[in-house]
Image (cartoon, rainbow, N blue to C red; front, top):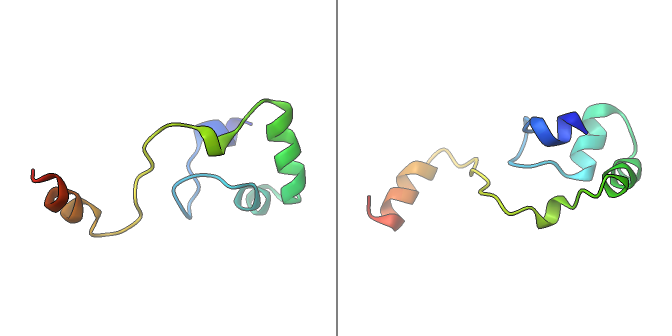
Length: 66
């Protein structure tokens, strides 16, 4: 639970059950059951996920006009 809530995965912008399972050595369905037991619904979390695109800032400025 701590890793899910406090750490960002090395690959990607957010945790998936499969990515977390690979990281901690459990089956992805076990991770899903643990998250469910604690009421976590990461697919419904409302926060900004940073892009992994190396040109993200450049594209953002282009779109926003900053």
